[in-house]
Length: 104
Image 1 (cartoon, rainbow, N blue to C red):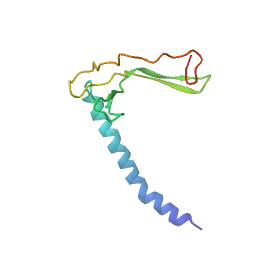
Image 2: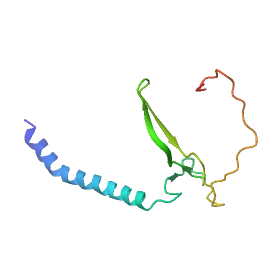
Image 3: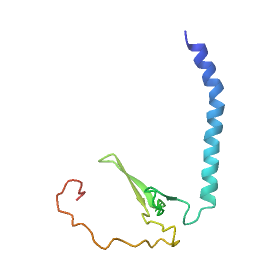
Image 4: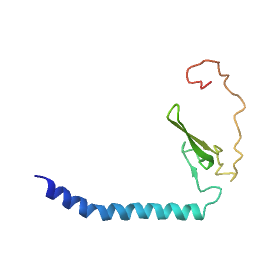
């Protein structure tokens, strides 16, 4: 019943989707080819100190828990001072052992 319109839609949209994917991959390839230390900085907090999401090692899949472990550089870039040495807070909260959210 709907076979004809669905087939027509798929045939007309598939080349556009393929072209879009190719365009994204081409841009990513260019970024990887010409990357520098700030290529993967993402301003996650909108505070002018983007987080460096460069991976420090390849992701690992934990077979037992079905989790993917991803390791990022994790440093913040100070856009004003143009350095990755953002001052750390002087006072840290003390974590209690066994507190909710504590991974240990």
